[in-house]
Length: 363
Ligand SMILES: *Cc1c(COP(=O)(O)O)cnc(C)c1O
Image (tube, rainbow, N blue to C red; front, side, top):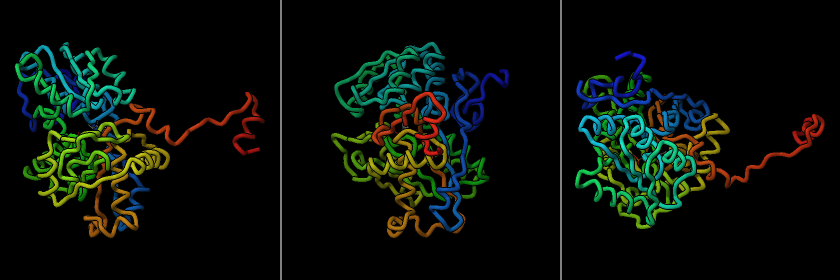
């Protein structure tokens, strides 16, 4: 293959993934996303800590779901599948639809009616998926997908598909390679809990292979109104502005529990207000615009390391100069409505330099 034709995660990490020469690689050059140093978050944490933001919104469809989808769709093609199906809060369907389009597979997506961010819904349509809005929430949609996938008419490409987790673990590999070792703490949002499961798997594998000397403590953050892992029970009617983590019964619940237990980590919650404030803060202070679910990582870091939070934070005794990585999972442009709670409004002026200077206060 021409080296320029595939720069995605399968070609970069082939030896660590369950692929063979018989696997047709379906890729959009996903992965290799920037790990951006944040001076301001580092300062908030203090004690010489270095905080990095893994900006997964820069994947081809705007979220980390592409890492898993290149694997799931490639393996579906290898098996000769003709159609794939998924339940989604929006980003899984965007990724499934795009990769299915590239592979000439039919794609059906089941979405909770009225609960999908505008950009994500548009993505499913434009990539050519068949979109079914169901009268229920994500957990209902996933139950239906399990039923419809059971008889082999469709390949399920939700994160219950183990190839999704395999693809997603490559984010840990990239972080280790870029930092030269694993970080001390890794913070990420938790919805269906596939991603925390995948990151932990990636960190464990590279440590076991001697490519890292340690593994990070994993910190997962859920939205307060949608926090089954934190609460330890299913949430029947999950609610949060962070629609990508609006999940009451996570498919990879056990994976999340294992990651937290084995890494001496934690699962905690942040409120919608904290999420929306953190989203705005990251954009206006560091120039990184992420969707609300992604901002749960930032809100979580702030909760842990501000004055009040520090007293009870499980990481308060972090080593001097600790490296902390936050995954921000999806691009802010996917959901243009949620941040409008801030009431953004343009200043108005006549088309006249003097009038503009006046509203800008630089007369
Ligand atoms: C899918 C998703 C999550 C949640 O990831 P899980 O693997 O379901 O825990 C968080 N943020 C964004 C933007 C997502 O698309």
